[in-house]
Image 1 (cartoon, helix red, strand yellow):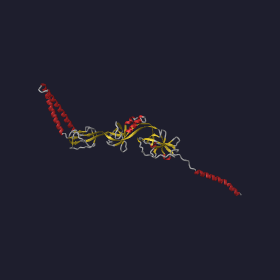
Image 2 (cartoon, helix red, strand yellow):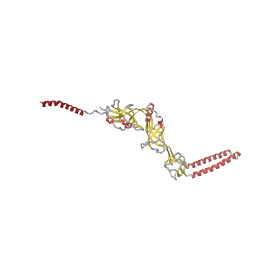
Image 3 (cartoon, one colour):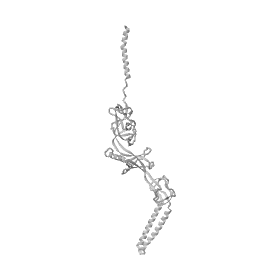
Image 4 (spheres, helix red, strand yellow):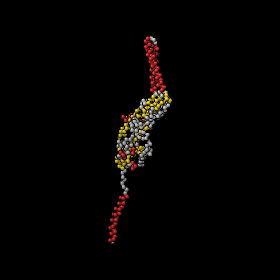
Length: 395
């Protein structure tokens, strides 16, 4: 009897222990609360940016002179080093002067004879020993002889072929002993002035029309003093250290290419630029007020190539925005549609979130946003590679 009572007394305790154990097991099997993803964002603001454009072009010599002889004769000497710098007026060639020296002496003798005859006739006409007509003819002969002397001396000077400009001289196309003639088709050599140097670039006429419309309707403001400044990118991707200035824009459109030639001039003190080099020139288009710049790290493209961005709204929920981008400025996209000032664009943690998800957002540093100081603008390509495709919206 007592054993039965002891067993009955143990049953409530055992039940309590079982309930406690089952309760503990239930707590252990319950999944932990989901952790809110942390993301880094950039808060957008209206900015004033100067827009520029990159145009392809080639370098040209500032001045070019093809050296040709002005008298006939045999080249006696070449007096310059090929590829060197020459000064204006420096002698380049010596043409055999013997014939021209003799012609000059003969002309001087004729001049002296004509002078004496004209002088004697001038005295005799007063005594009516000769007619006034004879005296006038003698004076005219004297003047003709004087002109012949001047011409002979000019031709004699032309036997010294001088540099018409200062610049760098090319190789000589003739050697000593070559016969050259006045007005020949082939040049003896060529001189090019390389400092400063021209850069001719081509701009599509359609872009000029677009730019004028944007300036007219107030979308762009004139770049002011910066409008005349031009920078240069070389074939190897490096930036030319000297800044150029805009010289002029052609007044006509090339019918074959539909483009307009724009000329700029650059200092070239170290002769880094040579004629014929392919370059890209950057010219200021205008200033855009209240521009929206989105970090490239926060802009991706979907399978259709459409630019998108993930934005954190006021409820700390992720939204998917479809964007219209026009160009890059440094490490940012210039956005015309889809974003506004105050939007918080996710730049870090994109792979962990989806549209509609709750997130914990903190402001990104400049390094996290991918900002680089001193960026330049370039036209946006439709086929620009995406950093990553945006997550698809939940169905």
